[in-house]
Each structure stands twice: as C-alpha cells, then as structure tokens.
Image (cartoon, rainbow, N blue to C red):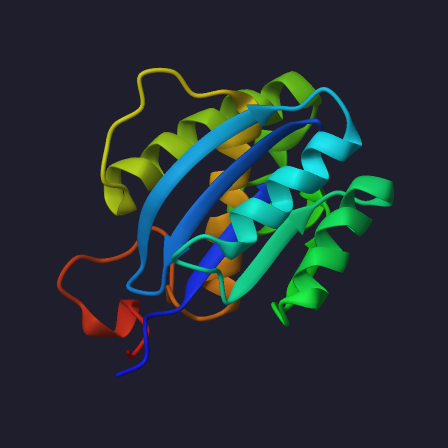
Length: 165
C-alpha cells in the first residue's frame, strides 16, 4: 500500500513559515525558522525535503533567489512545486475587505489559520507567527486546489468534503 501523499506549504523568506498537511486532510505540523542567510536556508531545505514523510507537493509563496533554492532541491527529488503569490490565496480564502491592507491581512490570516488548526490540526497554538499563519493558509489553498479538501470550512460527516484516498 502506498504511503499517503503530503503537501508542504512555505511562506518564503529568511523568516520561513512552514506547514505540512496530509491528504486526509490533516495539519501534521507547522513552524517557523529564522535563518541568517541563504546558505543556511539551502541546508534546511535539503534536510527538510529528505525527512519522512516526504512531501508529494510543495506550494510556495514568493519568488526570487530564495524560491530558486526550493525549486532546485524539489527538482532533484522530483517533487512538483507550485509557486504562488499572496493575492492568489487571499482572493480565494478572504473577502476583499479582509485583506485591504497589510496589517489587516496579517490579522485575518492569524484568525483563519487558527480555525484551520482547530479543524485540521493536532495541537493548539500557543503563539503563532505571521509567517507560520500564512504558511498554513498557503497549505489550505493547496488542499483546495488539489481537491484534498472540497470546501472551506469543511462540513463534518460529509464524505464529499474530503478527497478519496
């Protein structure tokens, strides 16, 4: 029997937010790393992508040199990567008024990320950095796009709201 697929969501930067989801869907973990330079990020990426469970998909918000580090390592391991911008997931997950400016968007992201943790997560947050909250929402966007989750919020007890294993 094949192991279940996993989605790694990344809010790109030297302050990197990460969230790992299973296809069930379940939020397995979420965290933030502060890295001093791109070389340390490159080492973290190589290590992270070789850990079990290895992601079947990577969704990443951001671009430039740091995104290239993720793309190159993912290509070495034949892991598909989808690069998105914040506007894409915000348009799908929020009303326009909820992300009219940066501080408001970050506050709304924190609230929705806590809802995702509550419904799909395995532990409650004590503190939640904005990069980690955004990684969780990038993952939610990916779950919906991959059809691992039919709608948000999910309806308990309705099998059509979860993908077929």
